[in-house]
Length: 334
Image 1 (cartoon, helix red, strand yellow):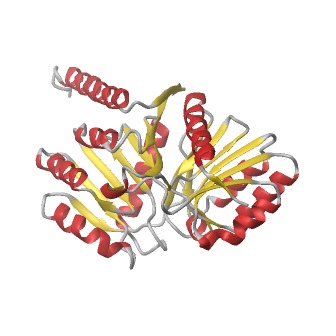
Image 2 (image 1 turned 120 degrees about the vertical axis):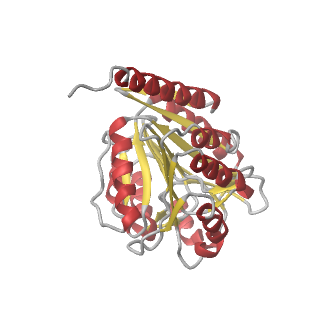
Image 3 (image 1 turned 90 degrees about the vertical axis):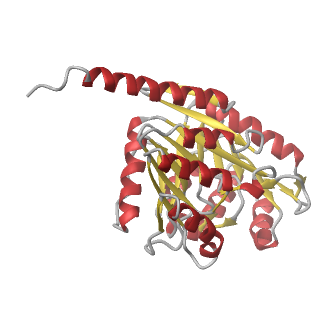
């Protein structure tokens, strides 16, 4: 039996329309963009970009939205998801339901559930579901360090990567499908660049251990002895290691040990206009990790997390430039 004569043409038009919508969203994001193989990776820098690039992706959906979010407290994003569902898009949202975040996420959960969105609490398989990602129409994904919490958009250093690499999208979608039903799944490979937790510590240690000239590290948390030891070892073998964090007494001992080994540490006071929420490691001006993983044992080994390793020059350069400004604006650790 042959297909109806207009089906192939319709599929082509839909694919072209989806590509155009995504291209417009990426262009509007003021992102650093580079082509890699058959796909594309674009960088969004917060707080300068604001939430608009993420809103545009959500509202561009034509068929499906699959979101995993640690914290969701953003009426605009919630309304956009509900509007998608109202026009026939299948919208599925996984929210963390741990003891801390359940109460924070309950208003969003209730709103979405009452507006046609399929929403579930995250599986108890993980200590936390700390991933922040959204897949649109099985063709594009936002992989983020930021939560969708509106009150923090104007003051936190965060990043998002807009990924259209097909293997990455398939891997994220496969993991979402497993997490949706609480089924264990092995880490799903993408284009060789996705970094999943539980189990991401080894990849981050390799990135640090293979650095030869420089390391840029920006972090909210520093609570992993293996990561700290690797940074100390890098500094002692002559790598120029620079670290930017917001000041938190919980990490004072770790930062003191890093500083004693020769790591250049800069911090932002609690009263500063900028809060460091990003999680990144950049090595030798060429290799970059960016994702939801904090540098803590819990985050690397027990939480559901998602990050990306990339060597795309424009993305790396965009992160470098932002880091260098943050480092220059921080206060040295005495």
